[in-house]
Length: 330
Image (tube, rainbow, N blue to C red; front, side):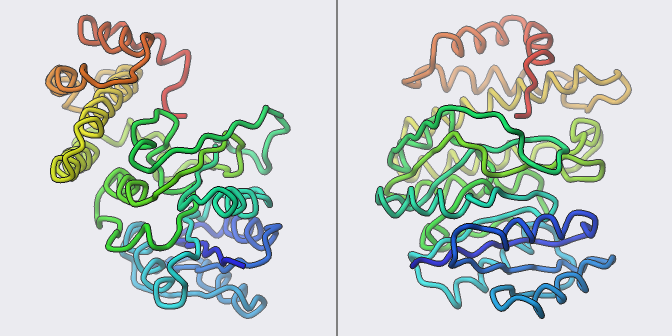
């Protein structure tokens, strides 16, 4: 029976940590291990982690100096590499989030029965203490990792996925950047011979004041990490140029365009004095027009999306009201 390792970075989340860890302890899949990486948390989290380790044999605690989310994940990855088999599974869970009791069993079964190296589920976003009762018809898609990177349904986030450990060979998260998942996840997906996507929500992405993603638009003004996301995509383009993958290159140019639309709209919702300089000086529009020209030849873009991209190219403000109504960060 394959083992799944949950790598959970821990920093200043004592209010949420029990809920997170308990959701993993409650998994219906029997062979789980929990790696709690205490990233120098100054609150009661280190003691909470140690208490769990005393009570449960499958929980390991690593205490370290504060180095940030990426550093904590990397420490967890390196530890798992030392004790796990290459076809065991690894997954990442943020310590203020939680998972459904069927997260592991469902995704591992998908992988084991269908020869997949990676599986992604859908996620619920909000501030609830439990998943909603919404019932949807289950839909499952299988593709190679290379082809899945062209699919709009593949998310960039490292969480809400399980990975065969070998997909993280020579892959680590970059330190001291925002948007660290954009630098990393695609490399693991590309290494996967087959990937499964299921539309069921087994991961809860908890939103609260003080979280990394909370109100991120207001944090961009004068932020030295303003363009980390763009650096990640440029690195991705270079990667696929070396691999001679033109469709994946064009898909990355398309992702730059969709991110520009998202960031432009979020900034336009703010008061003028709160907006970041890249919007004010027209840098977003310049970036968009450069990359729009490089992604237009990509196969598989729906007519609806092509119209959206064209309208933003002609009249950027046209995206603001639809973005407000539909909600961009989902």
